[in-house]
Length: 131
Image: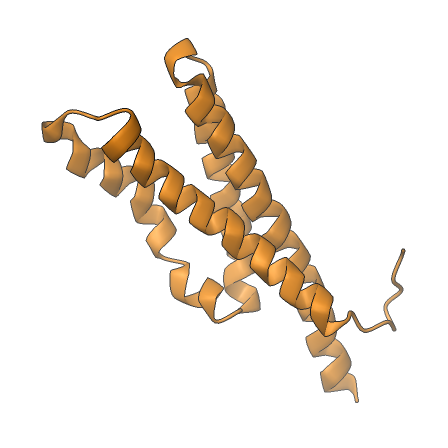
């Protein structure tokens, strides 16, 4: 179903897109944490550095994502692309193929959710402001 510029997206669609982006976001956070702490058991001297590098960038948009800020969702798209590339990189080795595919799937979910939310919520805000 195609929407023209005059159509206001439903609240349910905006909420669905928001939940989609949050699901992808938390899938990335939980997946990275579990991989390095439980599944792969990274060496103790490296764990702090690896978690800081891989989870650190995900901490910055947390508040804006939880509060549904359009601007945060918009720039989080670039963060999702970064984790997609990281997932492809992990997929290149046989022993980390599963984790790489998980990162690819979670980052795509995060990306699609952020794109949809940015598009739908900005249209809804524009429609409210034009009234």
